[in-house]
Length: 422
Image (cartoon, rainbow, N blue to C red):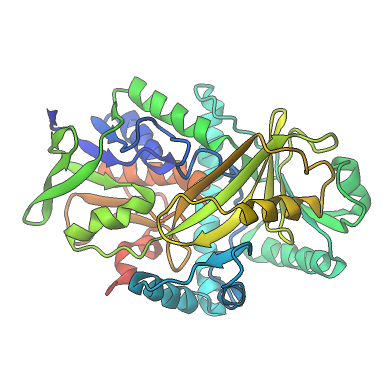
């Protein structure tokens, strides 16, 4: 294979698929390459994640107290945030960056950025859904967050009011009776909940495959089992990309390879501080009394609960243990136990167990925009645990950059150069 497309997109996850869709929709000649045999492989970050789209939650992961709690959990491999002890300079630098970003002032500065991405992101989902061309299991039905502790519930209600005032996040407070009417499977211990009608959910894998299908229908070339191996440079340009199926000489390269982006960028002199964070999910038969149309978020149980027809997906945990596909059984058990504190019927046998790696930045913001060192390289990676939510808006932003339009959102906070000298 030797080709000269307008744009080469490296990575067939939800970010790469979104870029290929919007670029091809704008008339660009696009080639999308994916290293795996198929789009959305079973061990990929997209395959069986929670599928939640939550513009109502503008909080970055780095926030006051999170790292300290994680260090307390350091030796507990079943904990919600597990950092496997190991000698790693990259992990050390990442943790220092995380600690810096966890300052309250930094968190407050980043919240409007994530809120804007989420609001524009849900608009993009709604537009795609309204087209009637994409069957990705998208449902804009809202998400209900449940609380066990009265103190946690009251604090959440106060926080919801503060977010309404500061970032226009709309919410509705559900007392215990309202929760049990909407979620009959909720246990008596549940004290209340906060409902966000602007939130949504989708089948991330189906959504990604649909975007790729539509991109191909719009003229994009999609090549699976095709791995990017290296780059040939000419001054400040990426002149060609060597792949396992030949050489591609695009006008523009979009690096959207998730956790693999850091290794690909390193020979270009770009040190992207991405840490692979493993997430898990367990899929069960949906118990009676758990709504078929309403996802639940259980912060005290550290679990997301997402209905998919007659199935129910329990997802959660964050494991910083490097790039590996190990499954720790006690982490799966912790997810099920967390859900069992809130809901009856979640102890049935697992129909499916999944794990996947998410690309985590130390400050909780994605990396989107041109790489300053190169004229024709665009980075679209580091979306942390929100790749699905930020997928379509990232694709639209990348298409705007490539076609020379003014991006619809300010990308200054998302530039890769914020991490220099890393």
